[in-house]
Image (cartoon, rainbow, N blue to C red):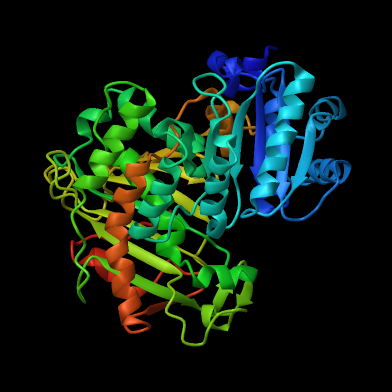
Amino acid sequence: MSDTQRHPFLHGLSKHRGAPPTVVVIFGASGDLTARKLIPAVYNLGVDGLLPADFYLVGYGRKPIPDDEFRGLAAEAIKEFSRRELVPAVWDRLAARTSYVAGGYDERPAFDRLAQHLAEIEKQLGRPLQTLFYISTPPSVFAPIIANLGASGLAARYVGEPHQAKVIVEKPFGKDLASARALNATLRGVFEEHQVYRIDHYLGKETVQDLLVQRFANAIFEPLWNRNFIDNVQITVAEEVGVGSRGGYYEQSGALRDMIQNHTMQLLALTAMEPPVSLGAESIRDEKVKLLKAIQPLDLGPNGDVARAQYGAGMTGGRKVRGYLEEEGIAANSATETYAALRLSINNWRWQGVPFYLRSGKRMARRVSEIAINFKRPPGTLFAAGDEFDLAANTLSFQIQPDEGLGVILNAKVPGLETRTQPVKMSFRYATTFGSNTPEAYERLVLDAMVGDGTLFIRGDETEASWRLCTPVLEAWAAAGPQGMDTYPAGSWGPPAAETLLARNGHHWRKP
């Protein structure tokens, strides 16, 4: 059996095998994201033969770690978090080209040492390397890192492809519109836009990428993808867990910043954008920006377009859990929302009059991320009267996690002599059709950045368009403090205020 038969992800990826000789430098190399996602992603790319023949990995962090110890930590991360077991032959090749540099993020001499380390690698190799800087640190040090990459000359080691430096910036990208603009300005002072890859790992998920295929490769969907046939769209990003030990961080974030401004708005943009002129990165990102700019300002009044809440005590996974205000590190009078819901209106020809509902929360009934396209009901003529006709509106749902796939709700005749109807669901799951060993989002995203494909990354004007919508909401909530904050029991699907948000249009939240 060939590689592409065993792993459909590899089929058609010949362009990815053309990555130039590359060194990936991870800032925040001793952090949780590096261990859980980045090291396993690089390793699995190596297993699939998708790393360039001359590939090097350099960790950078404040904590002094000898090279051998860093390699050992990386091996342990692969054993614990990789979707595949550690294969010594593969890891040994990668480990031999893995090293570590210690230094502060605002320490200019440390960046000079990093530059010297990279120069020594190139000298031994005898050829230049594309440098991919991955900033996986707290956002408070994004700007110092970028500034030092510029001041040290690391950002301009080579001019022009294929060896020009690139930078991947993790979320959160800013905390409001002003900070996002400032961070974009900092980046523009050091890098060109085509060198910058703002990452949102949701865009690397198979079902998110499948949105474009379903819309534009199937003639049965796109003709119906408009206000004439669609009644409403619901996007849910629900977490079963609470804040845990991250209370200090979450108090500075909240559901709107943590999930809706980035992940959920990206799902909205891909769902509602106009057809791009090509599959090129800029064509797709142009359409996403147009869509985000077409969203109308939100009504922030008492009966407006937003709802927020905090989870209270309840039951999750068969056990009792405490409420948000009782969690470690949370102030007794906290005004941070653990749940947020928005009702959006898009002012363009395709979507005029179709409400888009977005929600995200912690301690909800179960972990699920879903896009649900709810179609209008057919005219009530043939099957309108009588209890024997159990009819539901048709729904096309994209499940992004935990079980990637899609489903369609149809109305069908129940077997028997009488004419009775019942809603049924047709489902497709990636694991069932393509196997359970589906590559993780970070594998695709790291690979795309190496080859210079920005399709699944966020452009600077996208971030600002999203923050432009969300910042007035954050400012209004900050001014109100705890006043107007709703609550919901842990293990539920959210607060009454969110149900009211939909009820005003005669809708209700579906239960994924």
